[in-house]
Image (spheres, one colour):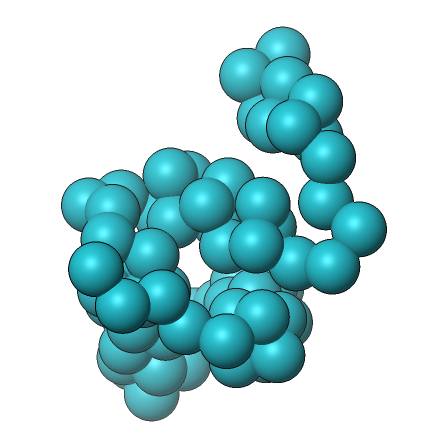
Length: 75
């Protein structure tokens, strides 16, 4: 499987986090669509089917990531 470059993954994570905050504050249809698009792209880019798994997989590919970093997601 092809894997996205870490810089691309970092950008997608940043977009996802910003859009999630915007959606919580605004809730507009446009923001929701953009959030859905970024979520889909993160899943495809990491070979996963849900956003939590996609975020964990993407973060593991970032420079400086450690295996124990995923433990925080399951706590």
